[in-house]
Structure formats: structure tokens, C-alpha cells
Image (cartoon, rainbow, N blue to C red; front, side, top):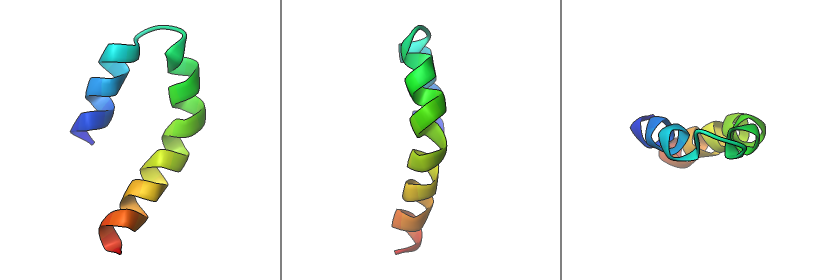
Amino acid sequence: LNSIRDQRRVLDGEDILVNKIHGPYRCAADLWDNED
């Protein structure tokens, strides 16, 4: 979760749109990855 916050700080611009689109998918993938 911390890495996501850091990424949002780094993006802090047009990339935020990409973060909103890929964010949920990346979070889900990370959760599944951790469980796996």
C-alpha cells in the first residue's frame, strides 16, 4: 500500500488517470500475488 502512495506522489499529474484505471487491477493482482 505504501508503494501505491509513493507512486501517486510521483505521478501527481496526467499519470493519475492511468493510476485510476490500472490502480484497482494492480491492487487486486498484488493481493492475489501475496496470497499465492
